[in-house]
Image 1 (cartoon, rainbow, N blue to C red):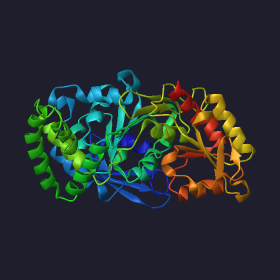
Image 2 (spheres, helix red, strand yellow):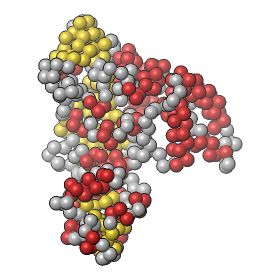
Image 3 (cartoon, one colour):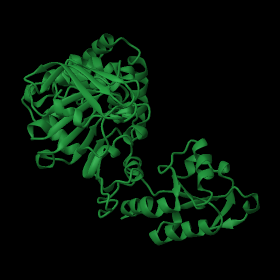
Image 4 (cartoon, rainbow, N blue to C red):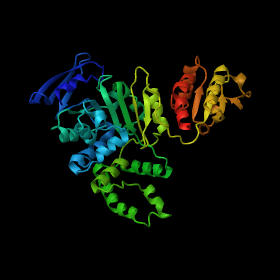
Length: 443
């Protein structure tokens, strides 16, 4: 680690400042061994092989530890002679050399360091964090580059000070946690005013592929890593030429690549890597739709939300002065949103008026209320009923019309499995966040 890394670190336990006790330094600036100590709570975190360690193990990401140790250099542009990682970085973040040069950048889930290398080559000062022991591969790959640091830490307890980074990005990582939304919400506070947050996450609409992929993952994630690797090697070697044949492209064999999915990458080692990567993680959320991810950005108070072309790639800025619009691009819309209004009184009427102004009044599909006296009466063309009587598949978003009753109703909806600001929200959220997003989607 570089000595100046300590300036952006904090104790993940108490958020206090850390001091560095270097035991082994190279030329005075690069520390290979030592300890980071918190005066506030007394916690100590070791620096081992040049990497600050804020976790004692790799927990639920052991498959990634194996993956990036075995394929530590396959995806590095400098090693394979291509520009694929640089092109992927730009496509999935919308950022280029001018956006990172001279900036302090954080890569959340850095793996073996493919994107750290890109940002460093473009002149950025970059820090990579990963929960797995991929940090050892990243450190070995990039230790000779000034301005690159690698940290091992849990995304739910990140050791970075608030408002620190000019750019924070995460490509293909957050969906491998047990709670994708909660993992995302750890990141906005790390971005400085005017800074950028960009993420790319899994989103698949092919139900056959999703079910088949999860079936195989349940099997392969239980195998020893070397056994899963052997199977990934065999499948990538045998199925790739088969899937390229014209016979498999015709019905009824055309369903086979969806039933037994493998990576189609032309580079054999990359193909084996990607196949292993798809089939072995403990967690894999494939439901990160543009609407869902944009709602998280809105929940975090970010602005200038931009939905890029590779689903789901979304970026936005921290704008404390609120000069930017909430949304700067059209939100992809998969069908018209269907609204339920929770509240049959004046608040419900106001919600209906707002939807009418947007031109979405016809998308009100139900009205509910907790007051038995309202049940059976008609509001906005629909009978008032209990929330429990509504079929979950019949609506997309619940508008909670009562501001005073919002906390208790929100708790009721959360007990039913709905997520705040994703599946339901207040009139204020509807006006300031959800309606602009749906307006853009309907445009």
